[in-house]
Image (cartoon, rainbow, N blue to C red):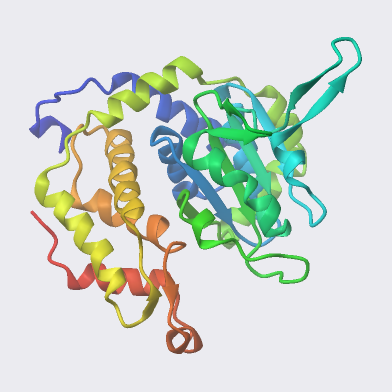
Length: 325
């Protein structure tokens, strides 16, 4: 009904059809996790990277692989380990006897969708190999710069519980992720459905049956459509106020940067388009606030000891701010 009350300034029919197809494709294999699926799609449409966090066995890697399967683009996977070197990610110069010259051999970072599994298992030196790639969509090796093909999206997973053999991600790297999605345990009903579906068919068999929903060119077109969506000045002020409050909240040791404000706007635009609207509402901003901000802020030691989470503080901040209407 809401859509009928407004004249559409932007044609979102192609985008709506693509989103419905991806939701159906992922929903056939991933039971529950509707918010995770929606944020994965929003991240793709908003041209952002995503960090999936959850305990082992909640389908983080499977969700990332399914997302990549929905796109007819190149996919590569990097398993981060403590002994992984930056050259294992970026590539290296190899001497060619035929030409008597060094030739650059591309690493797995040269893909459209790059799955970085267990990103917190590699030391800072290897994690830093992703900095330039994620922000500038290029890498520099031996003084030469190599552009990464669009679309370029990093889907990373990490386990928040296990501490043995893991390294904390630097704040600069966390800030480069559009969303951090917390993948939770399924409900009892959902787990029964998972058992019913998968005791006969393995996920790998279902993966092989999937067909791409979007091409690279279609993704570029959809992203351009989303960028053109309307965001009223009062909503931009609402976003800025949320971010500003994180920097002056006594419960937070570290607030969010302007990059977080941009991420909220871009994420809200994607969700609005996915909802069939060519304009952003306050609800879109509220919905993306926690996935955008929770990994960018740090709790004060006192609040951490009280058992609070960054999501709790962000929710408190939003409740204190008057929502524009």
